[in-house]
Image 1: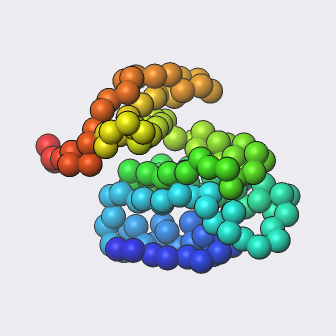
Image 2: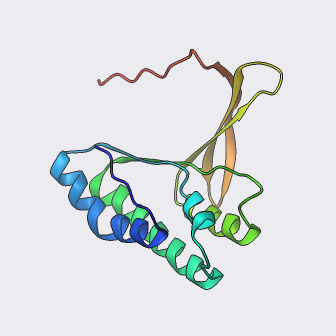
Length: 145
């Protein structure tokens, strides 16, 4: 199932009030939210206090969704020059709710991707696996036990 929202306000509303119902209705076991912070860059004339409020609401909703519905929750951020420092700082607060962090970088010299896997210990992330090299032909296979 795919759901689309077009503003940060719709995203916040969907995460707070609709996603849990959707998870139960469709018996979903995984939720993927790609590039969570990109909407904050695209939103015209949004004030930093409003961003702080919305990201706090989103962080609270994501915590509740993952625990209450027992789903695998995956999200991503693209770190680029378009994100102002304060949005990145607030975004890190949101991503601080996750127990694991995976960083993927495209290698500039070949078609490989470098993958760094980190796990949360206390308030910090500690490297579990240093750069694993993957190519665009590699796939992830998940089996049920």
